Image (cartoon, rainbow, N blue to C red; front, side, top):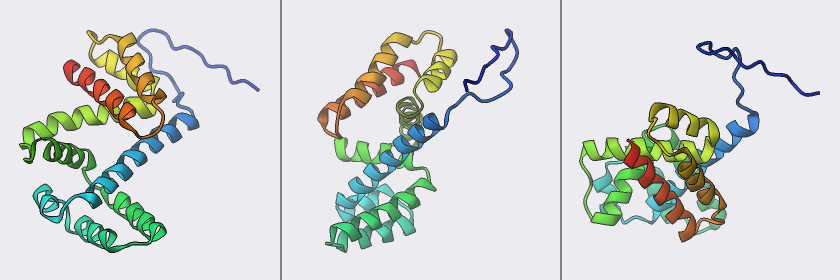
Length: 181
């Protein structure tokens, strides 16, 4: 049986949250995929570069153990543990620092990390939550081109696999969000 929703009058808040379970699951999956990719990238990073990123001691220990594991199944289990440890901390800032380190060879300043961390959070929200996140972004930044942002989100979703095409689409979305903020 279909559930009827009443559209609130202007200025009123809706009485109930209209976010579906599928939307919540999709958003959680995007966040989990992002933290898993971060964990994989950190495992492949040389020890000296990892020290420059200033990860927590527990994450550094879990990464050291993961590097020593040769069995694919055991390594995946250890990567899940690293992902869980990353989830508890400021993983978006770590992602920004890692990307900057890989691209430029230096660790960025705290101000750069904060600015790019906000962009990273918005990109993940747009990819995971979809329309609700887009509505919130357009509401907070009225000069945003809603149609263009929606096309960029769709392009990132449409790019199959984890290859270069998807990465380029996500970088294009990040540039658009960065120009708004």
